[in-house]
Length: 113
Image (cartoon, rainbow, N blue to C red):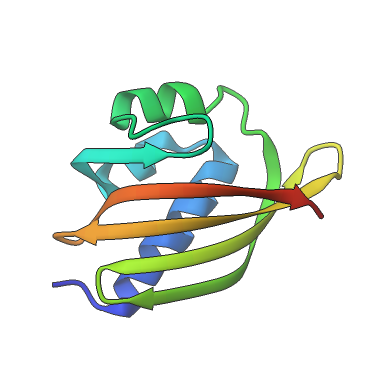
């Protein structure tokens, strides 16, 4: 079983990889049956997640994690995403882990920051 520190490192690594556009770093972090949900997506799988949520050019210049809490196999993250034009917004994400990998992510859209 992974520790809270390992889960926190996975989450931080996922956000860093997103800013860098590094799908190759994220694929091994996700469970084979990974699902992603948001107000726009309902339990989409890994392939659809990368297709819909990982544009060719990364949309953000930075993602600043403001709050991160890990409790067992679950984690909550609040972050501020900065777009290339300097505008920013905040979101919350709920992570579930299984076997040391991210099993699911639920995103709750925030507001302009």
